[in-house]
Amino acid sequence: MLRILGKRSSINVRKVLWACAELDLPFQQEDWGSGYREVNISAFKALNPNAMVPVLLDDDFVLWQSNTILRYLANRYGGGSLYPHEAVARARVDQWLDWQASDLNPAWSYAFMSLVRHSPGHSDPSQTQTSLAAWTRLMSILEGRLSETKAYVAGAEFSLADIAMGLSVDRWFETPFDHPRLDAVKSYYQRLGQRPGFAAHCTSKAA
Image 1 (cartoon, rainbow, N blue to C red):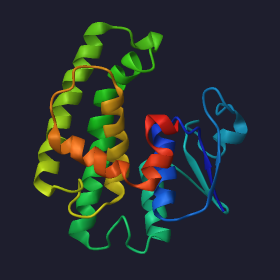
Image 2 (image 1 turned 60 degrees about the vertical axis):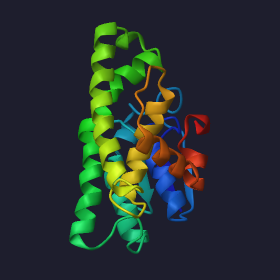
Image 3 (image 1 turned 180 degrees about the vertical axis):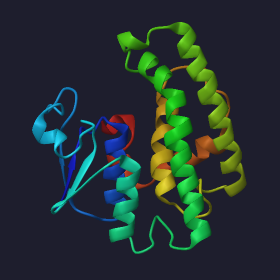
Image 4 (image 1 turned 45 degrees about the horizontal axis):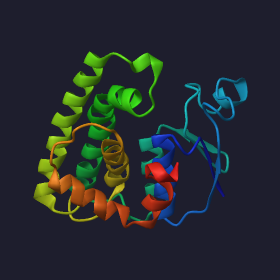
């Protein structure tokens, strides 16, 4: 059975839990990270020298980096489900997976930590507003894409990209501020909410 090391409140751990649910893979989740088992110990760093979650253990194979874990699970167990084999379709999934990690997540991080987590290290109002402005700009890009597909971020079919994107969208609606109207994003969020894996593992209520 797969082992997933990382606390359920982690957005990156939730990605892996949701992927396992979509692929109908049994797993054992173990709470590691702040408030749970310590990651800054030699035993954990032997698995991930970055001392971060999630870590996947598949028998004697150890893997870290959440989007890499998503790709591995789909490649090994998905049979083309969630991560298409055809080059153009796969590249589109990769594009939005990478955009979520490299552009969208850094934009919302400060605002989320300030307004939801109330982190003492994220208490500068000007930086919060800068974060919200960047986040809103990028969510407008997502709105445009979803207005085109009228379905999922990589196209007509649900994919790995929606697992990563859906969790960022959940953070968008969870964060208390004056949200602009993004009808396509709202409809997308509602579609994702109908998936059992999302309901079980990925909303703020599932934490």
